[in-house]
Length: 106
Image (cartoon, rainbow, N blue to C red; front, top):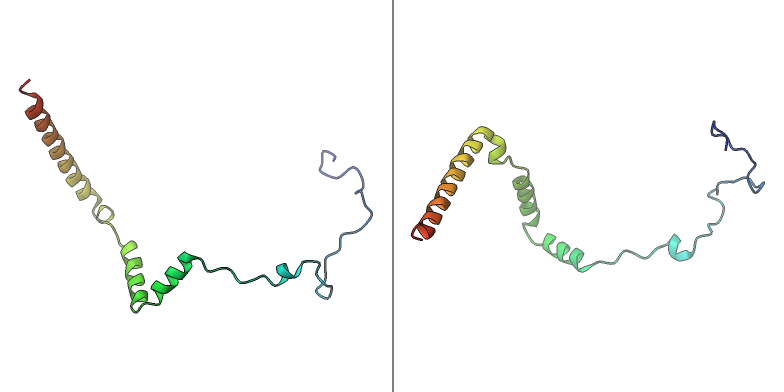
């Protein structure tokens, strides 16, 4: 290959590559031309059994709505951070008092 990307030599064969037209028969084996249907695994069977229950569609849509809801830390980010600071301060003070109560007598 040269620097500009053109090949320097001729291909090994003189045959031109031709695409198969739809009228020609395929060389693929029969199992590839007409494959068997996919197997139903245990997970697929259980999922289909749950989907067949009455109210499953409504329950699934409610679950999707629950997943897409806005979380509190997304709706009120500043208030959430302030409350988290107060809660963490209370937890730290409780741990300090616990350590003092356990090891203060030594």
